[in-house]
Amino acid sequence: MSDGKKRLRSQDWWLDYHEPDMTALYLERYLNFGLTREELQSGRPIIGIAQTGSDLAPCNRHHIDLAHRVRDGIRDAGGIPFEFPCHPVQETGKRPTAMLDRNLQYLALVEVLYGYPLDGVVLTTGCDKTVGALVMAAATVDLPAIVLSGGPMLNGYHKGGLAGSGTIVWHARQLLAKEEIDLAEFMDMVCASAPSVGHCNTMGTASSMNAMAEALGMSLPGCSAIPAPYRERPQMAYLTGKRIVDMVREDLKPSKILTRKAFENAISVAAAAGASTNCPPHVIGIARHMGVELDIKDWEMGRDIPLLVNMQPAGEYLGEEFHRAGGVPAVIKELIKAGRFHTDALTCTGKTMGENHEAIPFSADRNVIRPYEDPLKPEAGFVIMSGNIFDSAVMKTSVITPEFKAKYLEHSDHPGLFEGRAVVFEGPEDYHNRIDSDEIDIDEDCFLFIRNVGPVGYPGAPEVVNMRPPAKLIEKGIKALPTIGDGRQSGTSESPSILNASPESAVGGNLAIIQTGDKVRLDMEKGRLDVLIDAEEIERRKEAWRRNPPKMPPSQTPWQEIYRRDVGQLATGACLEPAVLHLKVIETH
Ligand code: FES
Ligand code: MG
Picture: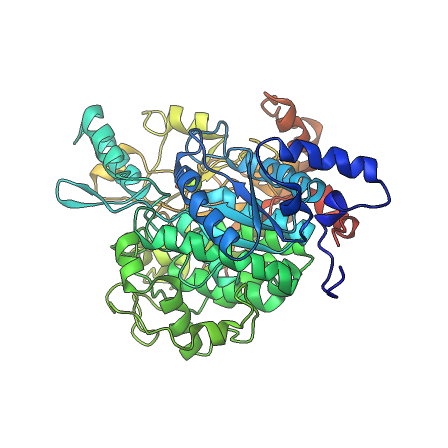
């Protein structure tokens, strides 16, 4: 361009003098709804709005309205908005699991960002998987991108008490198992937790992952926690639309923001927030698509960070209190004060984390966001376990109750050591069929195992590891047994499960060879879970497994087949491996 500014990539479509006939074809159809040639050929940034909301994706549906304010912001800053739909991903509606579609939403968005005349993009996030999918795509294409969270629903209430998304489901299931409520009340309890537009109002995977986007520097400060119906939400949409236009002018791309330091910051915020166990696979997925080394073991960095956010499932409150108390910026303030945050990490504002948070006050409600030196719980980050039946698995320590700790982790004879008996389920169907049957012998010294539920085995790795104990134990007051599996669990669950075990049994991980009745040892000190059988016996059982591997359920759709062929393990982000092998292929500039 004549003024010496960098020519925008969209101008390759609108102003290509080498192939004027193609330019005419590119232009003409975009004029057919009222855009003018002047607008498209003016060199103004063309900004995509990656729309994830739809009737099929109710957690994000509010973005259909927010997009109007995003457009206003883009126009006011001199850009031109182009809104387009993303493949819908709804956590609660998609069978067999929404995780299967994270990579599909990712793939589809990469094609759009690469193949259309876009200079930058607003990523509309909300429901769990949409954050990982959209940021992964922006990382792959390395096009200026900014996250706009949709925000959580308002607080839910049931009979005067708080009803938090997901978390109330696990409570209600226990009450139903004990026959203290009937199915009608069960429905009422669960539905009470969804009182407005927005995503889950607990610190489940959605609030956690939107907090991750903010901690990574990909959204404006304060964006993630604003409840969806609050006036600040469309105001944030407007500011986000304005900002992306300048990001394009500054050529502020994801590769400048998503650095190793940004990922370490995300790990610190995850620990302090009591975030979902789905954070490691999604955040590692983002890192891998950006070409940043991030190992599952790196999450140990957050292990000694205390729990600061008093929000369900680890604490008491929901999204409205968290927002009022200061949201993610107030958490970052505490981490900066404690020296546990990289203040020099660059963010989408064009400034560093330190600069962004300089003028931001500490929490307005110290009961909801606690001071670092007076936390809810000390050392609340994830523990990355290893052992002889998996290389790695994640344990969420922020949800460990005093009773669970006393029984399993602070056993009087050997603190930190617990030995018990394995009860093994072959998948969620097997678990549901047998958990309350008289034939199965489960007592409080049992470990519940579930296998065949990893990314390949039950495509997408469903959220099934938080298995409730049998009703007869719940009646005796035992609300949680140690549970272990190669699947995931909901971020809203209070279960201190050992999950995301990798490699999964379906690809030959040793979880495949554990048998009901085996003795198991949990050693918290060493971060190990081992089956107490010798190496020869393990080898003998593995050989038998290799000769006669159990049949996996058949794929029901073509995508499931493709996914199973190319997906990696949860420890490495459950990415499509070909997508991360060819990182350098995509050049948009
Ligand atoms: Fe969509 Fe929780 S189900 S955010
Ligand atoms: Mg979930």
